[in-house]
Length: 235
Image 1 (cartoon, rainbow, N blue to C red):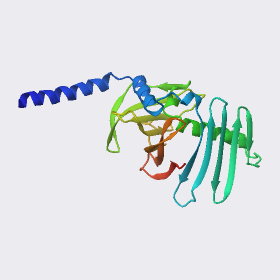
Image 2 (cartoon, one colour; image 1 turned 180 degrees about the horizontal axis):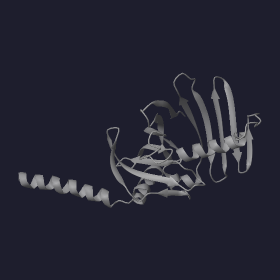
Image 3 (cartoon, rainbow, N blue to C red; image 1 turned 180 degrees about the vertical axis):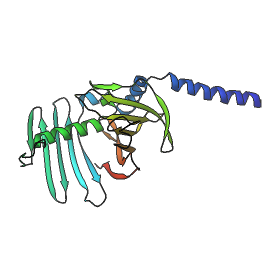
Image 4 (cartoon, rainbow, N blue to C red; image 1 turned 135 degrees about the vertical axis):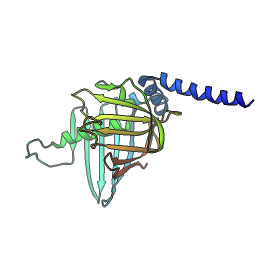
């Protein structure tokens, strides 16, 4: 009997290992998308949510964000220390509270800042679905790794030059395929870029517009694990 129990354990462990090895990056991504967007709502996403950013030695910043993908509409209204700012993009039309005039060469205009916010919030809160966007290059390799004491399935993504130059890694729960960590480097993480960039630990969940989003994102520098701050969905 003991022999059969040992054999069963070995076969089970082997089967799990083979199963993980056979999964392609595309398959892991599809399962992660099925977890976070079970009803395929992302393409028609239209909702408003609130995010509170907490950093050391600063007042909280509370941002109310509206993303309407079908109508190509985005807005963010942020309040910190009683000061309110807003940025809105309605297709090609840009409206902002900023009255700044650009005098420094290379400085962003207010409308360029609006586009930056749109891309930032749509990307991070649209993950992992955004990994299917044109210009995203998903490595076919799936790594089984341990990160901060937990086991994950790890995917790597790079981007076409017109999209971005950072190297991103995404860590998924091997049982549920929930996205629990992402990380980026500004260059080759095994070379000159190894001490650059940040990793973001994701915890708890909040359902917004049918999308299961990470409720809390805690940001750390890759170098020395220095804590930067947290973003929390608070509505």
